[in-house]
Image (cartoon, helix red, strand yellow):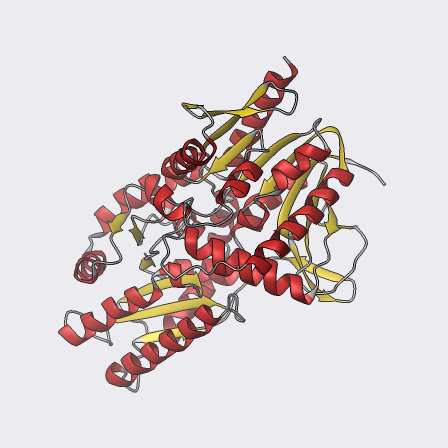
Length: 468
């Protein structure tokens, strides 16, 4: 078996199975961010193929060597739907929903993390760099270091890391911190997330921290330094710009506007169907604007794309029911024969269709209650090659730290959100252009290549320090 000098370890492979031996690239922020990096590097990707009880040999796709990890039906239920998405996800998103702590889930999480670590250890060449991705695999860095101390190990946390008062609820809080500290570099989306992590380490493990460095005891009695700091993730901005200039996609954008009755303003939201995204809050605000008479259904339409997500988890089933009831009520009250208040689409769309929707949308609504980054905000900005359009952006999304010329909102403040939507609808072309130019410059300068390069540079510096 050939070994790789660069290995990514993530919960999912970057492809979805569509036939016996047929695969297509997966949608989603992580894959979009790492795909260009992997294609340039001579790398391997370790991950689950997305179906329970599917045993596959390693294979190549899109220039990447893929190493599938098999999960049983029980492991999917306990490690993925349970521990990852019913414990860590709500806990790390400020307990917007109540996290559940079940020992059987934790046991499955440990067992699956061990399997990922073993596979990465097998495929990594001597002295290789291994980059572990996200909260499903928080124990892998330490497990990997114990197996392969020759490796340089990075870990990137794509979701928020909570304040200590919330994190301390976790029954396995020390094990998770020790797992993450197996990495040489631990990356977070925001400075605040890295600070929350360092504080948890000080309180729980009593390890010294200085600036971004954490002193971690080594098995030989010495110590090493782990770096924990912010590396805000981004997108392949150039690709979105190119798509936005294609004649067929521009024609599709015009077609979308026509199909909606050519309203003066299209408001647009696109999210995974998730309680952290603030979908209910934006619909409440829009419904009240219609009720107050501040906007009219003939002039303004809200298009909401909510892609299916974690459909076997109870909280997500309840959320879908609640949103669809809200859509039905608002449309029943305000629709006319020629105009619909909310066009709701519970489905995922290919990238080309998304860019057409971005071009059709006058106002982009990103109303997350808590979000690690939110790449949709950056995709919208990159697609607006005409320097028009308005981005309404929650201050609780990581993107708010960078995209400072967006109209920033507190999604819990419904009256404030209503005022911001009206302000966006009425914003002059000159102000739209001024804001969008600044946003586009930021996204172009800090694209996915810059993000990955900064993280890999930090890993290289860690390796050099270790060798010294």
